[in-house]
Length: 440
Image 1 (cartoon, rainbow, N blue to C red):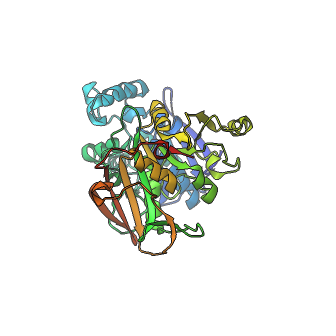
Image 2 (image 1 turned 90 degrees about the horizontal axis):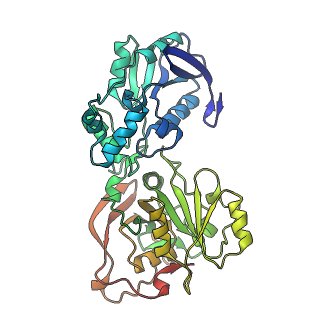
Image 3 (image 1 turned 45 degrees about the horizontal axis):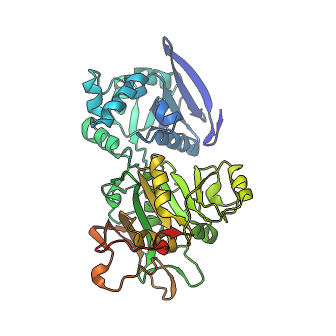
């Protein structure tokens, strides 16, 4: 079975009435020891539909990639394990209870169902049928290891499956750790030591979307003297690799990442999640006249893309983007460009709760000036460049007392870079006028 993650030999095993387990195998495993193995429980909503309530889909793809990269291994896909064994319909009923405040453990109990109904005897039998002598188990769940061992399988060790948490599933992940003994896949808190995945939730704080707009987080990476780029526009790389990994974790935690057209034309970013295992957010571009090139990397098929424009945009450009499967939406205009309030209101109506703004300077400045930023995350690199592009432009502030402030800042190290995060507090009303509420 060819997949984007590699080619697998696919085996099907009947393990009971109307129940099948699949084994995706890479390389020769018969008679082998220490075979990298994932036993993955069926999750239609996460694996197939891409639900962000769990991290199942990301774990499945990460495991398949790990096995393919090793050149030998097994991914057992256990059907009948939906909802930790309670079935799809009951899992959806549990979702309703979770929406009313119950956690994933309590929801099952409230329905008089076990919090954990899975058994791993059948998965162990599948692995034995493949004549594997011992495995290294890709899992964050010690109970899965214990269940396979109880079924007679030689499990040498557990290999963690790290995933970057999303604001939609961090509560689910923490409940599994606190009440079911799982290892938290989103990594340790930031402490300056490199790791594959960081827990970025402290940076995001308490995400509280409003009725009229999502929770807006502005993320900046700048030099000690407050520059985003040199006078020539060079910005690669201001921050180090560890800070960029944190940035990818922030993307994975967000519903959307938003930039202005200037960032697209200057840097041609992809705005996807690549440095950590996680879901890619929606990519949002603000472009008054649809100057975005059709070959821009932000329009590739790695993640959905949404471009906001105005009635000034040429019809042929709209058609060109639509033909690529890119959503194009029109919002009201002002003298200076498109309305940021209208963009954010439309995103909220679409169900988005958290928008991460990554650039550029003009967009960040307009958002701060309009009082539309809820939280700021600023990575400061220990370098000085002198003249260059400012991280934030003129906000019309003439007194320090009127400065935008960061409340209760959290400070972390990421490699050699310092990250400061906190809720945005302003001591004066947002400036009036279209130049403070629009972006070109």
